[in-house]
Amino acid sequence: MTTDYTLYGGELSLFTGKARAYMRYKGLDWQEQMATRAVYRDIIVPQVGAPIVPVLETAGGEYVQDTTDIIDFLEARHPQASVYPSAPLQKLVALLLELYGDEWLVIPAMHYRWSVVDQQYDFIMSEFGKMSAPEASLEEQVAIGEKTSAPFRGMIGVLGISAETIPGIEQAYREFLTQLDRHFSQYDFLLGSRPCIGDFGLVGPLYAHLGRDPVPKALMQELAPNVYAWVERMNNPVPLSGEFLPDDQIPDTLLPILQTQCRDQLPDVLDVIEHNAAWLAQNPGGNLPRVLGMHPFTSGEAAGQRFISSYAQWMFQRPLEFYQQLSGTNRQRADDLLRSIGGFDALNTKINHRVKRQRGQLELVEDKA
Ligand SMILES: N[C@@H](CCC(=O)N[C@@H](CS)C(=O)NCC(=O)O)C(=O)O
Image 1 (cartoon, rainbow, N blue to C red):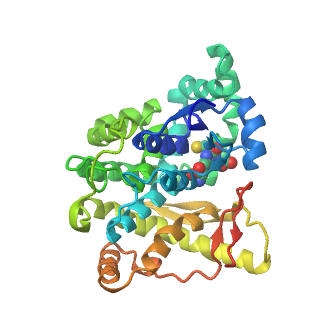
Image 2: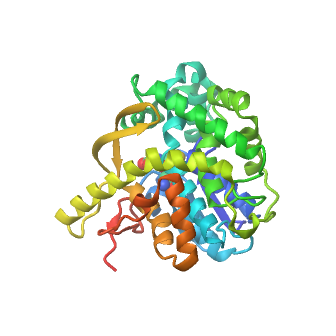
């Protein structure tokens, strides 16, 4: 290995897009390698216990999976121009928006890749095929892609994307794009001229799927040119540049987006926490399954059923625990913000069965400490 880090992933992968943008911003000495069949077999599955990307490899032979863990691992080694604001409200908002990008915008991302796949068939299939077999012909790649993409394509039902919910999902996404476009007409990044962890959470879905697949890319360019310009900035950053806004300011333009997150995503996460707690109470010391059945959800006007993703609790613990340890004036200011966006009760939830990640597996376990 000739560089400090290798990131195994792919251009079409949502979470690779998040880690890539981060590594570019930090100006690290790194290379990206496509997660081919051989890489999955020889590196990813043995090291992380499951076929998932992205995976970070260090020159010293350490492996880290999960973009949040990758970013935190690299932040500890390269603290300059941290992507975590030190001002408390900004940090809370950054953590909330990371959760929103990672775990909620995957709904429009997967919708605009797979529900409209007939309109972008060769592009999507050849992208999947290229990842498994970079040397194969285009025709072969399309054929391979049809097979390797099947598990991802099959996820749309699980994510709650159906004929009944599609109109509402599209409407909610258009509203989100319009709101974010207004924000980026005034600011380079979410919280000023420096990208925060929330920008990296959002760029996963907004690049790999929504800003790159032909159908949603055209929609973004038409409806939200400032969002498209931000995607390009995220992918071509000036390393280590920029500052967060002074005085812990939260731009007003972010409030409607946070309100939607509190209205739509947080009830889903709170229900996940209840299911996780029930499972952990019945299975002490067990590996929490990644999926615990289906439950109702809403996104704007859309109402349907989606999977109970146990992992969402782990991501939600980040803003929740950060908020719950605030005190004094900072706590009061955070309370005011949360009340104004409708997130006060959710962030005051008491977690009785905290979860943590475990090396070598994707299933969470209870954190007894
Ligand atoms: N939370 C994980 C999610 C990674 C993820 O979902 N990666 C997708 C590709 S973008 C994948 O490989 N999924 C296979 C799976 O979830 O089993 C992260 O942040 O890295």
